[in-house]
Image (cartoon, rainbow, N blue to C red; front, side, top):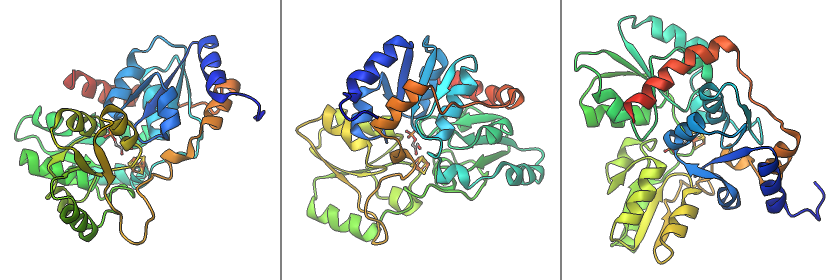
Length: 310
Ligand code: 13P
Ligand code: SF4
C-alpha cells in the first residue's frame, strides 16, 4: 500500500463506490471498529448480514463469521481481510468427527454454537450464539434430547441455567481458558468495588464468581446501565474499546491471564489490520465462497436461530 494514502479516507471512498458495508466484531482493533458501519456480537452481526442492502459485505472478524454472512446472503460478495483469521474453538470440532459423534445419539437434536465451520452448521438442527443459547434450549420441549457443541464451557453454562442434560462436545476457545483465578482474586482485593463481568466461554470456576455473564453486547450494555465505576472484564480485550468509548469516566481492567500468556488478545481476530481491510476492499479479495449444498443445509439451522431470537 502506498504509504502516502490516508487509509481511513480510502476505505470510506471505496465503501461508497462499491456499495459495501463493513461489519466488525467487538474483538477487532479499535481503529477497525471505528470505521465499521456496524459493530456487534455474533448474533447482531448475523442479523445485519441477513438484512443488509449492500452489494459487498466486508467482514472484519474471523472465518466462521464471514461464512455465516455468506450463508445468510449467498447472492452477496463476502470478503474477509485475512483468510487465515480462524478460530481455535471452531478448529476443536472437525465436521467428520462430529458426524461420527452425532451417529452415537440418533434421537438427539443438534445445537451448535455459531463459532464453528459452515460444514458443522450443515450437520446441525439449530445454531445459537452466546446471547441466545439459553433461550434456544428453553424453547425446546423439556424431554427433548440435545447434543451441544462445540464449546464445553458455554455448554456447561447453559446446562446450569436450564437444568437440561446436554450431551457435550469437548471444545473450547483458547482466549477464554487463559484467565488466572489467583490473579483475578488479587485484582478484586485491590479494587473491592469493581464488578467482575465474564463471557460464558470462560471456565465454570471463573463464571462462578462473576457479577454478570453475557455475550460481548450483553457485557457492554451492562457496563453502560450499571452504576459501578470499575469493571474487571473476562473476555477478549477488543471489547474494552467500546466500553471505554461508551463510558469515558469508568475504568475497565482486562481480567489477567495466567503466566503463560501476555494478554487477552485473540490471535485470529487480531490478524485483521486497517491495511488488509483496505486491500480487501480494493481488490475484492479474499472472497468467501461455499458449496451450494452446504449453504442450503446450513441456512435452516441459522434461520431457525434468528426466528427464535427475534
Ligand atoms: P459474542 O460476541 O457473540 O459474545 O462472541 C464471542 C466470541 O468469542 C466470538 O468469537
Ligand atoms: Fe475463536 Fe476464541 Fe478467537 Fe472468538 S476469541 S474467534 S472463540 S479463538
